[in-house]
Amino acid sequence: MRNALNFEQIGQLRVAHPGWDEQRAIARFLDRETARIDALVVKKERLIELLQEQRTAIITHAVTKGLPSTGVSDYRIVTERSKIPYLYSSPGTGINGACPIVSTVPR
Image (cartoon, rainbow, N blue to C red; front, side):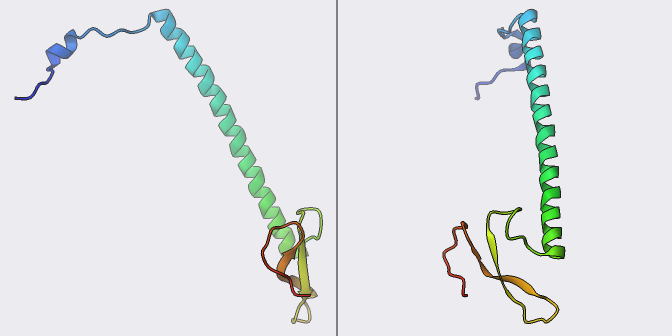
């Protein structure tokens, strides 16, 4: 036979709990902290939106006007002469500069 508690026995258990004043103080603290966390989440969501907009702008700029050699990035993109006459240059086979790449760029 299993040892178990029935509903009557559970109802007779004495459980310690904080007084009403302490419960109200705990609830106020949790409300304050939840509001603070919610505000931080809103800020992070806005930052994510702005970063996505920046990413889109950088990609659009790179596609429409080419990759900059300075400004947006600290890396210099190595370009090479395109084999297609109406394209003046295109990104080369690697990145030259501070980017840690384990390869060499043919010149």
